Image (cartoon, rainbow, N blue to C red; front, side, top):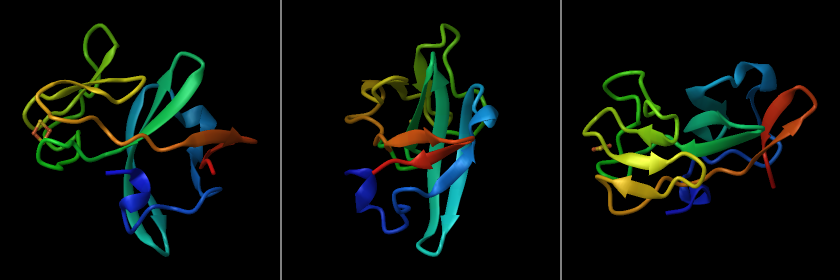
Length: 117
Ligand code: FES
């Protein structure tokens, strides 16, 4: 499933959050007239990345049961529901799920992180 398959997928250019707010791993809801779109926004070195906040194991949000979403070595995103893990750069499944997280294209526009085209 691609992020654009979600009915609530925001249009390109939609603001997600201030760039300065992205210091770690952040579950957020992007609210537009299309509905609420759940995203995980994270800093990965100099890059800011985003994924749909829906674990492909049972489509629960990664923060369903807690707020520790990054492995101790900082390389993997963790689902708090049943422990699936994903590469934080690509979203690829590493354990506990048959497929990866859906990447959402984002870019910085001025002081804000926005949905990219
Ligand atoms: S829903 Fe994420 S591991 Fe089960």
